[in-house]
Image 1 (tube, rainbow, N blue to C red):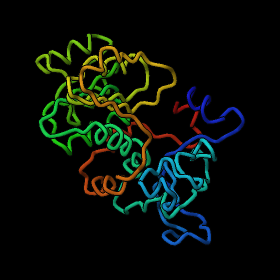
Image 2 (image 1 turned 180 degrees about the vertical axis):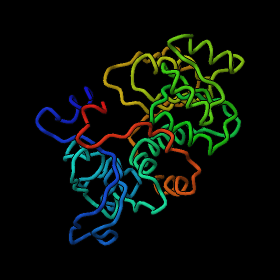
Image 3 (image 1 turned 30 degrees about the vertical axis):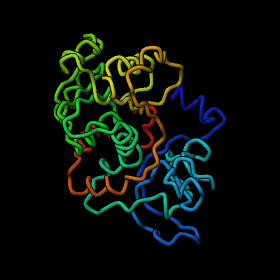
Image 4 (image 1 turned 90 degrees about the horizontal axis):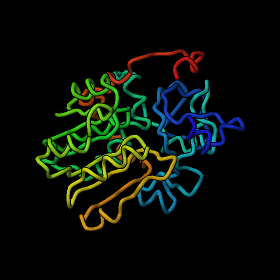
Length: 286
């Protein structure tokens, strides 16, 4: 919330929120793919589909008024009614057989984990990977990484409940970094070689440091977390390791694929929805 306050103008009344599911109440004259009454999933990224960046599938940086604007440049989804720009390109039909608990993760957490963590991190069969941070995005990394059959999947967090869930959802090893040295344990698990891919899914200096200390020569660091302060970037140690370091903002170009995977129960996202609140209970929920 602090980052949202700093970056989104929440202080002057901007409504936050960039994730959600809903029912179409009204459509503009240019909308062709949706009608009143349709159940839909919001994408956190809006796109015109025709500008220079959209033609490169760089939808996060749409030049015609799209991109990551919900709750930032325009009012977001934490409201009873939401206006969605470029609706034909920015909404997805909610399948009749899909639970909304699953669908809401398709707005951001699941595709962000897949695109910015797993795809940018170039996860391959047989790899040793670690996901540092077991929140919804980190869990999205965990679940979608399994599409690519890594041999070792390590999840690092401070919360034992989240780590138990990570183990249930496919992690081969878990580490509570508040109770043991995460870097030392990762090196032990990987027989001293380090990680093929380290995914940072929190956005704080300590978790970034775990990643840069535990990646192997020729490995990848995929930064997924949103950082609100500088980190110590140990380039004097990293330059010689032939690493690839990536970061970015979700483009949502794999959301349709992930929706189909969720629809046929390949991704058990419903396990991540542990509590339910009414809209009037928003303050209680946080």
